[in-house]
Length: 458
Image (cartoon, rainbow, N blue to C red; front, side, top):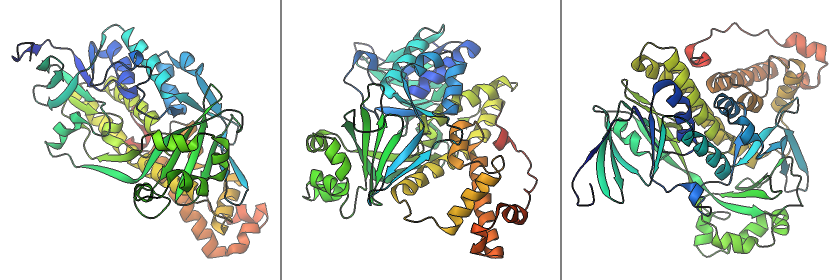
């Protein structure tokens, strides 16, 4: 509506992107030079004008997939200047031991970056790109897939904006996705039984080149270094159940006492932990799975709108950036948008399911470290060392390659089956057998056939 409350219809941008977050900005940067004008609609105010308005986690992780997109878009150097390289994660165990796990076997780091500063670089780059227009304070309430068009609400009222196509980059609670659900898409939006609080950790007490975490089995505290030298901490606990949980805190147990009992080392490091726990918001975690991502030649979903995942592998943003890259690769390789969008959906859905599964599983791997390695764990490690090109650690393949997440998961499952086979056939004595015997006992890899899901569109 206009100021007098009447309906109005705006002009026709080539592409409307719903959501101007990290993935929306990257998608606009990829699309505009290839396919014409793009309008980004964001329901929130411009975050560059609200320095205290950070709503999301303070730090995100950049790995190979994210860097590929940033390099394609010409902003990698600017982003790298505000990043911290992290070479591994250190588990501070309850018995006083520490366990350092390098992120890669050859010393490659992943990179921690403050979400707010990364977002600012991407928004600035998008605004400087010919054909890109960003409009803040614009809430998209519905999408008409047939027109196509979006219904937009702002402080002046509502209006209908028609366009050539609509891309939904508006997060786990996507309004754009609702249009696809109305056409029969099966969508699962699941609140995980974990919640978190973001905690500021002072500089000077922890190694600033690695991620730190304190696992207790039923809760975990993690701290990621920032360029300032401080660390961005996160307390993860169950929403429900007995202590440690947020339900127990709501039921009368003192949250700071609960924290101190389970995390004595971080308690000693963070002098104002009680005040932070009392003041910081408790945020829930949402997982999204959607079996359809596109509609004909006019609509597609990217990022959290179709595959929101737990944050524990650090791949939600990287996977969203890869969505945008694969989308334009598929469009570049196709005769029309219908074929390109169909190829994009086919390429990405299995990968998104795989990394979502891996991300949730990774929390339990970190939060419940075994006191002793099992025979299977030791044999896995030996196979990885003896056949370094054949058996690459799962985390390393996810973080430092652009291989299909689905193929990485399948290969990891094959390794599980191989380890089980070797132990069943030769017994646990194989774990300590000489290298030559272990090599001789290990069957050669079975031939595989590449698929579209493995290769993407590039």
